[in-house]
Length: 250
Figure 1 (cartoon, rainbow, N blue to C red):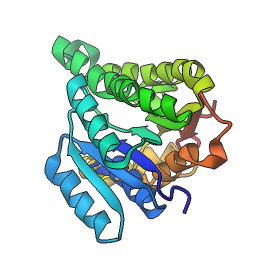
Figure 2: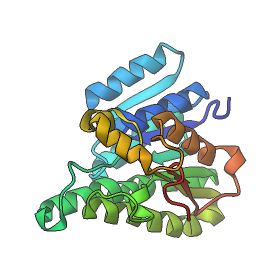
Figure 3: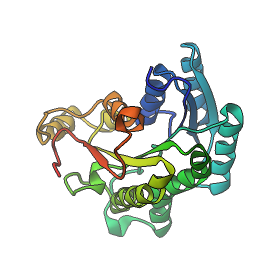
């Protein structure tokens, strides 16, 4: 098992990609702290993983609020004594709209949810990882932060592009401490939200634009996160792994 005994924090773990990431780490022997504002969702996930023998800590946490994040990280460190991996997965946007339709407070909320959350969580775990002289941080960005191949919203695109800039800067800053910082930029992923909001015709139109002619499965994104957090990626930092079926090639 690649992560036997290691301690992993996954944000936004109640559903979608985050849930698959948590499952994958647990399968590989990690002790997993699952964070989400959706308490019933992470409680259900914890029960599921515990029936498979995993060590799981479910923590209700608003990752846009610094004191909430610090409290959650402190609880993880008290429970298991260390933190080896942070996966900043929390993010998203409510619906597609034009820039002039975005209220000022919605802009700020989406940036906090997608970008500031990564800063707050990284800031909280860094002192622990620095003491260990080792750690892995993996940030979830998006294809919209890399190129304009997919139309969503300007606040989400700006925040996800910011995640990439933050990833590169932090990687350079904490590399001497033995900490790697990388990003995964998925394209369209067949999460529950995606399938519930798209008609079969819309799905067909989306897949036709992708060279591999299909959208990603959430488990495929999870495996890319595990790779960047693994020993096999020990000499990779400041990188963005594009997982978009060839829609954007940089």
